View 1 (cartoon, rainbow, N blue to C red):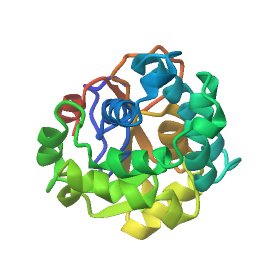
View 2: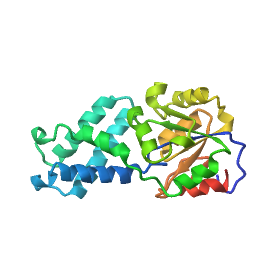
View 3: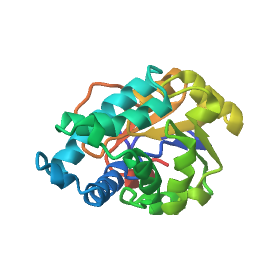
View 4: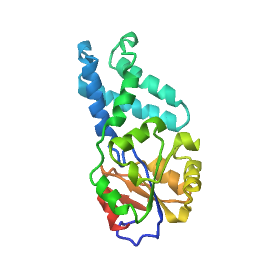
Length: 237
């Protein structure tokens, strides 16, 4: 739907957090550079920090796909991603720093980078709508991210996969969010960057969707709205 089309009368807005408001890629890159230096990973001489970051992203993305498909646990994801990253770069498993995964988990959520216009748009929407978060991210770090990036006060409810018992795109997670917030699907809108988890998941629960597509990736999905900058939300909300 063109963003200039008349909008329904929404009351509840559900936002994804990572890759939608909180700039996961930028914050993760800063964290990975810190860990590369701290553990002197350059001593192996077989890869650069840029190659380390690129390989980590590939491995982490693949593991998150497995996690969202309920094929691995949260603990498995956390324990495997750096071992797999570094061994793929030629490091012997015995040389992988034993605490690097925990350090990543400790440092990352303290980063504060958000997408352009995040605070301005949330200031605009707050008060006009009731705002919530619905995220597959881990409960123990999502709240730290919100505090670090000064986002906590905008949201009434933060619904995580751990509290709901389901993972996006499972429609049951969205139905749990509606029940928990007292919202109804016809008056709700989901804003997120993932066509499967956010758009399809919300659609299957009867909720309209905004696909946040900052890189303007080509796709053939049907969405209620599509934006490439968060500021565009003000054009129809």
